[in-house]
Amino acid sequence: MHPFYAKNFLICPRCGANFTNLDDHLYCEVCQFTIYPHPSPATSVFIVNDKNQIMLTKRKYEPQKGMWDSVGGFVMTDESIEEGAIREAKEETRLTVKIVNYVGTIPDEYLGTPTITIAYIAKVESGTAIASDDAQELKWFDIDQLPPDNKLAFKSVTTLLHQAIKIIKQY
Image (cartoon, rainbow, N blue to C red):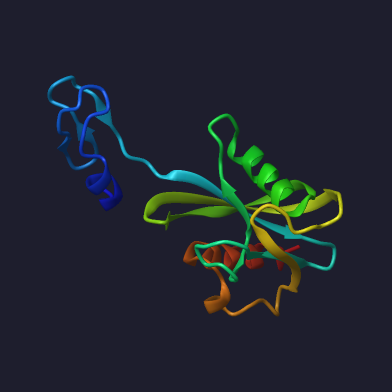
């Protein structure tokens, strides 16, 4: 079990009894309530232009304030992963994008909470890029002149960016 759940989910929300921590879930022996811990889904969107450049965002807030990141964020409960990716792109860049490729998934953590990041490559359908929401700056990078890995906000973004580059080079 991920340490986040073992540390923070101690009491049953139904009856107030202590949870029993089993290998893959938490169980209340009093009321039989069970929690199967799972990661929060997040998206990573690599927007590509006609010059095969990738847009990255500079983070406006902690964690990793000032570091380069992909467009993306958490998926809401009422949307698909793809809808979340498109919404996050709109929120952070004001662009309407179309997903053109799936890149991959990778487990990670955000402020100690387990996440699973699902990454896509997208193309701009319309709009003018303006840094919005939690993006301080937007910048197009040539795929052979990306920021060094130590300037990227998260390990998952670094790994997924390298996977996206391999896909883009096949275009």
